[in-house]
Length: 120
Image (cartoon, rainbow, N blue to C red; front, side):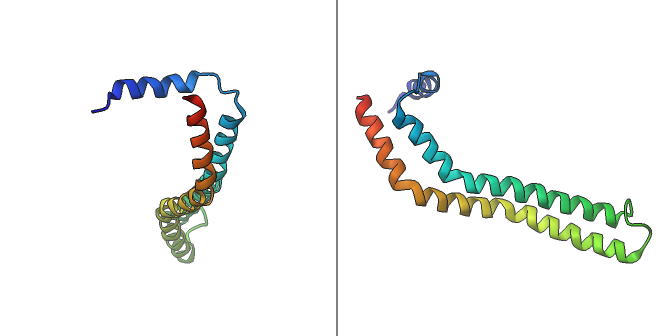
């Protein structure tokens, strides 16, 4: 059985250890490259769909757009579109993250192996 306290302590200590080696920096850059597309998409799409949902709510409750039945209908449709978009954001994020990790997996694993072998 592994000592989880020891693993936790090593994980915390590794965050504070000086990381000036070029391999560690390269590994962090590769990790960011693998995740960048998914993260940027998730934030952008999530914010956009939240705004669409909010505008739809405002139109349907007649806060904006006046007292027209057409605006209420448009607000309901925009609200539904926003809800669907917000709901789809996470599955799309996971798919983009998986593809980004698959794209850089070999390089990351190779570099991580080199770093761990040189640390021993």
